[in-house]
Image: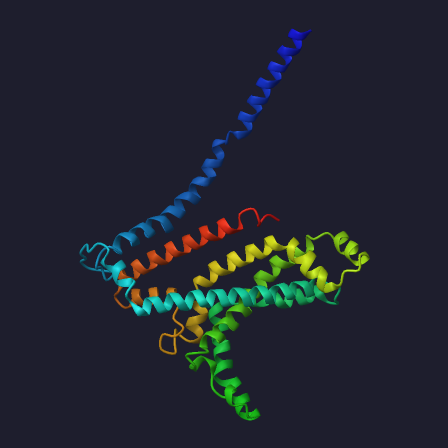
Length: 307
């Protein structure tokens, strides 16, 4: 009896191992479907990126002859005040916009998931900015900031409103944050709505029975339960805002002067101005910075972004 049981156990163990091996095996058809994507990604992104890194070590202007100069372009970047200013502006703009977007989107999501009338229609209205081109939004707001608001300021006798924000080197970034947030809030809003709808209603019913106020429920129940969604929105938003380009082009063109020139604008302007190798080195540094920020965020949020 003992022998039979031992043999059965051995057979079951062998069967389990075989089952595990079969579940881990990947069917060849999956690689066949994956191959076109990998091939396109390699040809469209990886290969051009490697070529760009190579030319960042040269004095190429984008065409014609070139000479290998090593890390000269990289050394020059760290002493170029225009490059440093573009990095400072981009980082400050991204941080400010992430804060504005997440606060506005979260408050709107709380309102649009509460017991209000016409909330389905209101959700549709708030999502509209997300489907409009950034450059179109920028040109519309450019007209508002340059013409409508100054005219209203003159009529109402408000001195600070009579001058366009876009013409003020110290305040132009505020206009860019406002417009960028106006377009970015809907996408963040949808993620927060999904997070709030995933919170069980029983939790709030129990809180009401215990006498918790709406404010206490917001800070002690809602925020902790949707913390993973906050992390996702912060990461996605910060990555996107680091690449700010089209809205800035439509609003200020990087001005006044170079006060609102982002890293992306600086790189593209250099490509058009004959500084191909120099700006390709800038693009490489920007890529490394983005990767480091991503790794830092992942290390800080590991284990906290599960929802």
